Length: 181
Image (cartoon, rainbow, N blue to C red; front, side):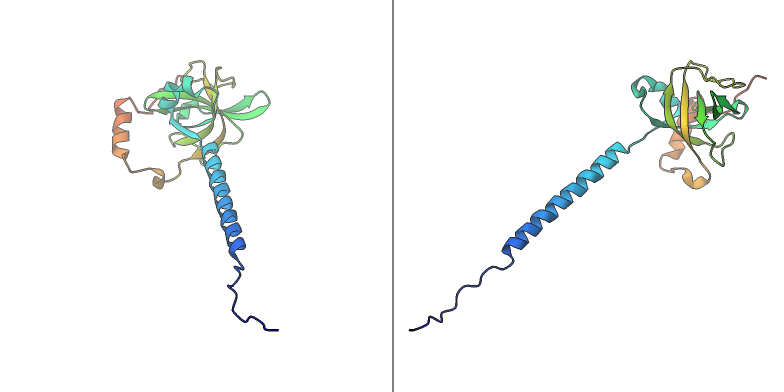
């Protein structure tokens, strides 16, 4: 009996594992990208200056968004809306006022003439807070539940800053308001 000692071609040991690993990595990468896209799209909060928010009120509807403006000192009133503690005030940007009712405690650095960024939505009703005299008084108010205060000069986006400042001034961007006693 003779034995054939001719070498056999090597068997591919990892061919199936390599293909399976490539498919698994591709599926995990696709899932990670899908989760990232969903979170980015779902987490988008729209930012409007007070004048833009009023102008776009019909298209914004009851959607949650972010509002930016400067609180008018004589309008700030702490009080109650129902049984909830609120701060009612008016903000202004480019000559347009928005009445705000903020539910909960205001931001630690909240004060007149220091810009605030508020998260919330439109309510088609005049603010119902004792002692608050709304400056916009247009039958709407912004109900806010989150407030952030601009606290230093690094907050300003210098890109196009001078142009935005000039546009605001042209539109009557002064926040000087005479509050009636």
